[in-house]
Amino acid sequence: MVAPDPIAFSIFGIDIMWYGVLIGTGFLLAVAITYIRAPKFGIDQDFILTITIAVIPSAIIGARLYYVIFTWDMYKDDLMKIFDIRSGGLAIHGGLILSFIVAYFLCRKHGVSFLNGTDLVAPVIPLAQAIGRWGNFFNEEAHGGPTDLPWAQIIDGVGYHPTFLYESVWCFLLFIFLMYFSSRRRTFYGQIICLYGILYSVERFFVEGLRTDSLMIGPLRQAQVISLVIIAVCIALYFYLRKTKQIKNRL
Image (cartoon, rainbow, N blue to C red):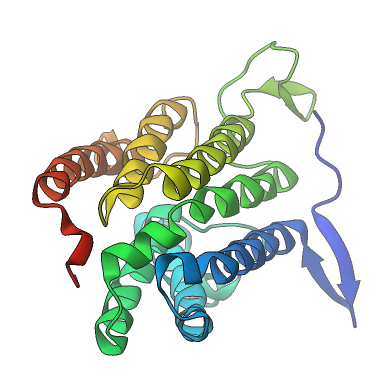
């Protein structure tokens, strides 16, 4: 696979990158599906629009801040580069952390169960990720080490593990599974978001091990450390919520 031009099109001399187009497309599809499914979860559709206005920019800000913090040497001499996200530099963990914090307080303010709300959005998060990951392909970034596999991503004549593809396929399959499970098998609030946290983090742990551009915590790949923490927390929370049956909990 050879990536085409990372520029999708230009408007008034401003280049619009495929990276941004794909992330935006993922966001829009996620919001549309969430809006349609909201009544099945007992959540007003107007609340979905309200929370979207706050959560989407929070996700982008959180993702960018997280990336900048762990790659500070790249930005400390030119702070304006922090605001240039067209060429990449968004970390999914940072986006999820800040968006969930904002969502929690908005749910509390509007009297909506936070756990029920996260179950509603959990299936579409991997859908947005599956689409957005292709932005890494166009930017020729976030790939793995050299390989001669038939599906290798070719950069400057060298084949690399297309880790974006591995994650994209896994996330799309996770989207399908969580959509089915949340519609047919959910038995308590928080069940779907816990499953997302566990299943996505398992994939991220192994795929991260293939990447050559990982953000680091000392000698450790931070995404792998965070993934292990999320897996442990979500497993513990899953069994706690199942035991206490938090169906009517307003948390």
